[in-house]
Image (cartoon, rainbow over all chains, first blue to last red; front, top):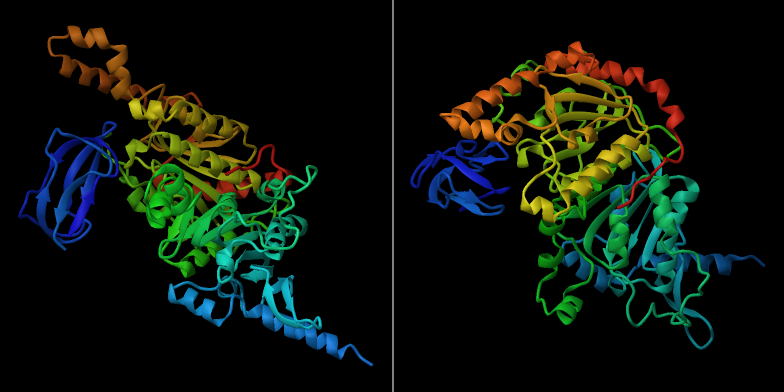
Length: 71
Length: 517
């Protein structure tokens, strides 16, 4: 299981994947808005999305686990 | 009558010293996956180049006839040696004896490391694994007598070394107390993720004083210290740390009186990269990869990043342009929009001080939205540390080339330009007192609120103002030396580095200000 952790705080602009989705390494999982910039987060590994802990519009914090990917 | 007996005795003492803490202690050390100090030194240096200083220093144990039974060698190994053919000073604690806590002779040799480097004007490499003094003292006779009031300032040589020669240090095991202080008093420091921890004080002291129960790794492992800037880099293991130190030294002159070494460059200076034409998205909200720009503009594979784990909104490192060394600094818009945070500013300041100390020209790739804002930024005194970076830039004497890649805003942008610097702008450059997104909201607050569709009016105003921040009017006003096709960045910078060569010799010697940890 691989956790996708947030590098900074910000707000969640778009969540592009949901639980059960299969992703390849490098696929964009979600996009954060930080200081008026879009910050895409890519899948570090290939696998299935096992959990999503963020929602669009939510204000999030540094080091928060956003998603969990099998593999 | 010859001196054979005595020369045999010298040989015997040298052999005894090589036994370090003894076979059992060395086996235990190896068992933890760690190299001994002598192995570390040999792996760092060119083969057979180590010339040891004080190999027979230590504490002798004698029988009743005054015959030497055994020798406890000084637990700090020190000497000269070469890295890629260039002489350096290298030293480190021997953890197989007293856990690296200094013995009397060990302490003398350890303190001598900086003095030797300053005297011989040679780069200093310290390979640390050890702790500071012990409450019981260093264990020698008379050692518990406090030092005289007129003793030379203990840390003077540590500071002098930083102002005179390149200092690179690795933490290869647990490093605490004095060695931890010396570790960070470096121009480049790296810690082994597999074996090192850095501790102001270890778990036992912390638990006693603070009631906090933590392991060495939790207190001072790489996850803590590569993120807070205690060390510049983390490397997988000891060998990788030594490789990073060799790499760092390859960019550095031997001392402040020399220029950095120039190497043959087989990467064409006219090489252009088509990818630069659209690497910066037209949509200002979309980020781009500054490291990708650095890699393609600099000589192939020459970029050596320092401090990637902390102050992550700023990217700093060393690289080459047509074989000549430059310091490289760029903003990372993927992290807090590339803004000047407190730790980013500290990292940038130290980077500029490194360049100033060793007369390294600076290439600055600018995408600066301004100081980081918000309550956390206020709590971290961002404006003070950020301004320190701005004033450091203003006081540098090394040549600068600044390329306006995208944003260049506020007070913070001034940190990215040196006095009399060469300034180029990409078509994507925007500059002004503050980014339109924030600026419009403040300056047109009432007008936006009064509009029938405030959100639409805000966007309209932002577009109008963004147009005014374009680089074309700036170029017309001779506000930049030139507006360039991004693909021409490497050729432009290679011509610049050639032009500034005659300026460099005059910069040698003591800098107006030097680097501090």
